[in-house]
Image (cartoon, rainbow, N blue to C red; front, side, top):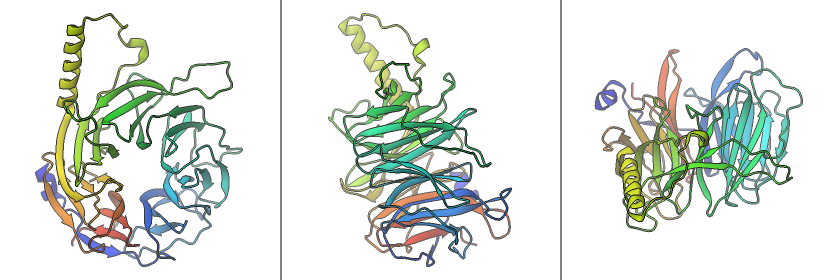
Length: 398
């Protein structure tokens, strides 16, 4: 992994985006493939950035960071999370509890729903052979699952956001969600973390048929402890996570540990599907203790890296992270205006990105990956947004 850092120099040169129409705290940033309005057969990568002023902006990924002039949906409150499906369909969630589906080609709002009562902090999507699945997580301690027809780049008639097909009410607020593909289950599995719990939770989409009009609950497949041998009641919360771009079962986790964030890189231990799970048996107390110890040892062995990032944070911070596109390292945010890069194999801090954000200000969101370079090739960039109202694109030295 160290060799990878030598072969692929990390981005380190900051460029502050000065084309945003308004100065506001940046809440979400990402790069998405978006269909060209003039030629629907083409798509291009664009920066999506949302601000506390309720705006959503599209910018080019080149060094000009030009603002894309196209109609975009307006929001009644700041947008906290967004994702693009099939390069055309934009899903946004906001502080008002709304989920909004928009068409990036026409700029029209296709449909919207308000099934949450508080901030919808995350939205995730996955498309399989038949459906597009959407999951939302909110601070009303609920996760909702929606099912749509498979969305593709062609315009679909009568797309509608029907009510959630499943719901999940948690003991505490959810923090992060993502979809993973289980090798033995036809539909995706929802992976989530929640506040005041050191576990990762796996949920199945196999919704039982019921005559009741009530929305059924997601089925818990299993859970995985990220602090299997900890004696503390609550050691940390897995506040943000991201799957490796090279290994779909390798997860990087940014935790709520104070005064400095800790990074965990863990191999996911997918639970077996319910049909193949062993039938419950009556165990003696000693046998149960041995079984629990064996499980804890297995969970501990799955944790490949548990490193201190030196990124300062408080209980009110919002940890975030992003993988390098070759999976050689992980970027993490901090409340001191610095982005830190850690080596994935050792957990060592190998680079710090300074000079883009004001010293001592909160970096709220991160994105890292490949974009199209000026010469037509690939260029690695890191994009960070902060509460200093700056959107910064970090590029590799030339």
